[in-house]
Image 1 (cartoon, rainbow, N blue to C red):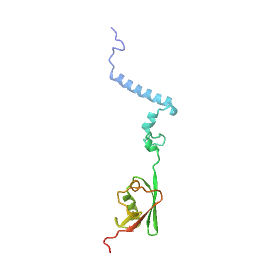
Image 2 (tube, rainbow, N blue to C red):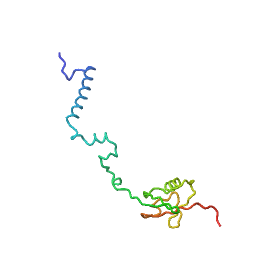
Image 3 (cartoon, rainbow, N blue to C red):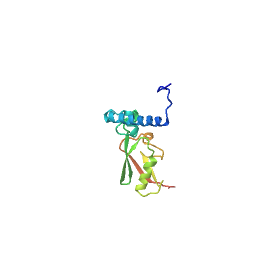
Image 4 (cartoon, rainbow, N blue to C red):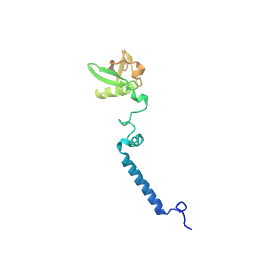
Length: 143
């Protein structure tokens, strides 16, 4: 009695041929689809998430970050910064001290005659655009 095709147990060669055929089928489908018909999913798999081709679906990332212009004044010298509202001022302090070749913590920074702490931010001080921060040498002791 002859076996039907469905009853036949596949040989290992048959499995290899099926795998090869399925790979060929996939490559032919990709070639025939062309670049205009490629799905967004395949493009996302090839491109990084922050690609300029795919807009982000996160609404917070589409709103430009608000920056505040701040000027730090040491005597007659000035340094200008555009700061995000959440950046701590210790970053600004270290840049100013590096530019003027000063040791860390040798300057004190004041806004409206109130000392600015290292962990203060533009938001915590409610600074407006073009705010001027004065820097003075730290003074220990007094008389």
